[in-house]
Length: 250
Length: 227
Image 1 (cartoon, rainbow over the protein chains, first blue to last red):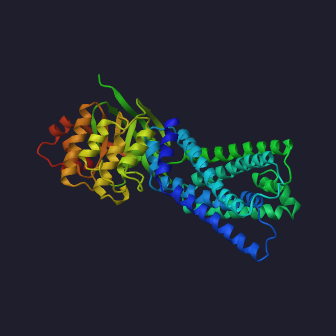
Image 2: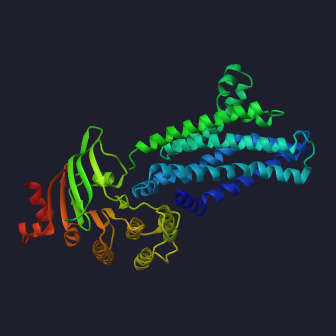
Image 3: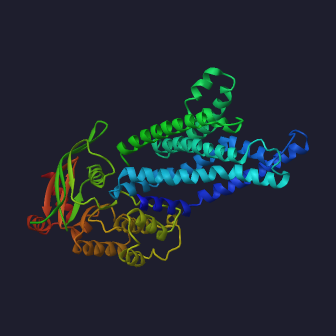
C-alpha cells in the first residue's frame, strides 16, 4: 500500500496539472483582493479585513470544488483514458490498493488546492487592511478550519467517487462542477429560505457549509458533523469501490 | 514433470449476446513461450485480459501460480506527459521495487533511457518498446504480450525476438499474440490456435514441424482452421 501511495504521489508531483491549478488559485485570490479593493474604494463594501476575507474565502466552496474537480478529472480521469489504471491492475495489484492509494493522494492534493485561494485572499487582505475586528477567537477559527477540512474532504470524496464511477469521462467533470460545485451551494442558499430543503440538507455535508457564518460552534454541532462526514464518506467510497471492483477494464 | 503456472478450466465470456470465449481449457507450463494465434475477434485479447485480471470471466475457473504478471494488452499504457525514465520510476514504485539494473540496461539498449522527450512524442515503435519494458518491471513470472510487434522496425523486431528468448532462458513464461505469424513461429515453443472463442488446436513446436513440414506459417494456420 505504501509503495502504491508513493507511486501515485510521484506521478502527481511530476504532472503539471497540480502546479497549474495552484498558480490559478493564487491568481484568482489576487484578482478577488483587487476586486474587493475596487468595491471598497467605490463604497460598495463598508469594511475590509483579514478575518472577513478568511470567512468569505472559506465559505466559497464552489471555487474549491471546481479546482478539485479539474484536478481529479485530469489526474485521475487520464488514468482511465491512457489505460494506466489498467496497467496497475494488470500487475496483479489488488484493486482495493489501487483505489485507496489514489484516494489518499488525490484527496490530500485537493485539500491543499482548496486552501490556496482563501489563504491568498486572507494573507493579502490582512497585509493591506490588517486583521481588525476580532469576531472569532483564534481557537474558534482553528476549530472552524478543522470542520471545513472535514466537510471538504467528504465533498471531495464524492467528486473522487463520481470520477471513478464515470471512468474519468468529461461527464464526471461536468457532474462535479455543475451538481456538486455549483448546485450544492445554490441548494444551501435555498435552504435558508425553504425549510424543507434545509431539513433535507441537514443530513448531508452541504447543510453545514455555513460554518463560517455561524457565530460559534459547540460540541453537539461537531458531533453531528462527525457522524455525517463518516456516513457520507463511507457510503460514497463503498459505492464507487464496488462499481470499480466489478468493472471490466478495457 | 513441468510446473503449471496457469490453468484455465471452462472459461466463458460474453459481451452482451456475443460469446467472446466459450469453454476455454488451457494449461500453461513454466518457461515456455506460447503463441496465441487467431483471426481478428477470435477471442485472443479477451483471454489475455482475463488472465491479466483486467476483466472477469462469466464462468469457469482460473488458477494462477504467481500473481506476478507483466502485461501489454493491445496498445502500450503509460503516462504520456512524462519521460520514459519517470514512467519506469512510477511503475517500479507501484511494483514495490527499485529501478532494476536489467530494466535500465534494456531501456538503454532500446534508446529510451536517455531520451528526455515526453512519451506522447514518441514514435509507435518507441511506445511499444516502452510498453514491453514497463511490463517487465518487477521480474514477472508470466508475461502476457498482445501484439507486441506492432509498429516495430526490423531492428527492433530482432531485439524483441532476442529479448523473448533471453527471458525464456531465465524461466519466465510468455503468452504472446501477433498477426506476424512468421515471427511467432520463430520464437514460440507452443502454439494455441483460437477461433470464434474456442481453442481449435494446441501444438508444441516439434509437433507442428513434424505435422506440417515445408509449410509456411500462414499455410499452417489456414490448414488448422479448415480442419
